[in-house]
Structure formats: C-alpha cells, structure tokens
Length: 308
Image 1 (cartoon, rainbow, N blue to C red):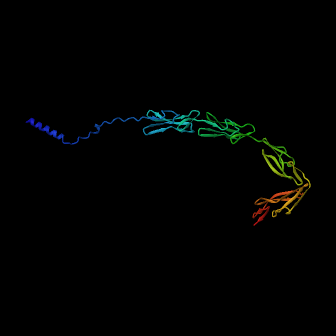
Image 2: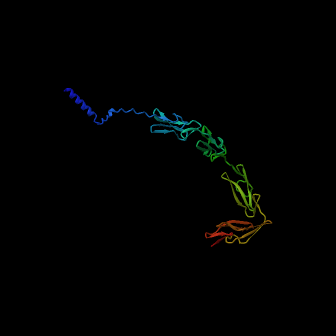
C-alpha cells in the first residue's frame, strides 16, 4: 500500500513539471557584468614633437596642436598616461609656428642689412618689419639674423632721420646776404646752386635763404632801373604810352613802351575770373603792373571787369 502511494506522488510531481509554465527570471544577483574597458589616450604625432602638428585624444576629448603669440611658440598636446596634457614649446631660431608646428622660415631684407641710408623692409615668416625713425636722429633698423632683428642706429653728423632713413641736412647760404636786387647773388642749398636772374626787363628772380631753407621771390627794380644779368642797374631813357588812361579795370588797355631803341607792348588780361592783371605807364616812362580785384557782382572778361 505504501509503495502505491509513493508511485502516485512521484507521478503527480512529474505531471506538474511538464505543464509548460516558464521558469522564473534570474535576479540581478544571478548576472555577472564584465569589467569596464579602460580608454586609451593616443597622440597622432607620437608625443611632444613641435615639428609635427598632432592631435591627442582620449574618448570624446581631444586637443590639437596650435600656434601661440607671435607665431614663435606651439601649444603642444600630448598624452600623460591616459590623460591629455599640454605644454608651450618655443620654436628654435630660424623657425616659426605655422599650422600648429614649427617650420623653417627664410628672412629677406630689402636694403641688404644695416643700411641707414635706405628705408628697408624685412620679411620673415608671415610678418613684415619696416625701418622707422625713433626720433629725429635715430633709426630703428631691421635686419636678418636669427629671425627678424632690429637695432637703434644714430644718424651721422649733419644728418637727420626722415621716413626710416638718415638723410643729409641741407645747408643754405647766399652770397649776396639775402634779398638784394642790386647784387647778383648765388644761393647754395646742399650740393646745388641757384643764381639770381632776370624775369623781365625790370624784374629780378631773387634766390635767398629763409630759416635754413631755399626760398625765392620776384623783385621789381626801382623806377628808372632795369634788370640786367640778375640784378638792377640804371636803365636808359624810357617812353611809355597807354590806351586806357592808366589803372582802369573797366577797360582793356594796352601799353607801348620803349627801353632805349627797343619797343615793347603789353595788354591787360584776366588774372582769374574775379580780377584783372592791369598794366600801366609809370611817371618815369616805365611799365607798371598789378592785380586789381573786380567788385563782388562783377567778373573778369577779356581783360576788364564786367557785370550783368
């Protein structure tokens, strides 16, 4: 009897295990997670190499080499273990930073070196440096050495700095002592000379010095004197006739005058649209001339002032 009961219980348990019911899901304690993998830092230029532009990266972070300052220094990214680090690296002499790497740079000086007589420009890398004046006597002179270099150079005696170069200071002298229409003089400015001359029979073109600079002026000889060989001398007897009666800006006149046996004539004309260049006879029989302004509602036409 006991044997029969045992058989029935075993058969019931067998039937219960074959009912098709799913097995229970395992708990989280039953799942074993694999250990996380460490992310490796990589550097495309192999480390601290200022001559190659590289990128250091780890995971989603990265840093690419780049130039700093005046293109003479590289900000170099590299791997320090599994972390990204960076360092400022100076390019050596003769190199400039370009595109995140030190590259060899050539230097060119347009004036050939330390030449203060010329305004030169040094081209180095991507930059240009032009000679300049620090003050009136000193040049900031650029030249090529280990890159673009410069030096402060003083100008020589009787020189001054103008536009980045030393030039000679011109010395002015006048043999007749200034404006003297009765002596033919010669003004010397630097290495050039300028002699007084005659512009017309009674006008001297006078050269002289003013404030150390060369100047010139037209000087009319006194009545009864003529310009001869660059200075005023006693003139011959003169005779002068005029058609408009003297200084008349409302009539175009002509004067005819004689110097010795030589006859001359001149006619009034417009100096500009508002004034007349008037000629007339002087009391001594010579020629006088001057600019006479027209009134505000007048203008010059054919050597005389007219109005509407």
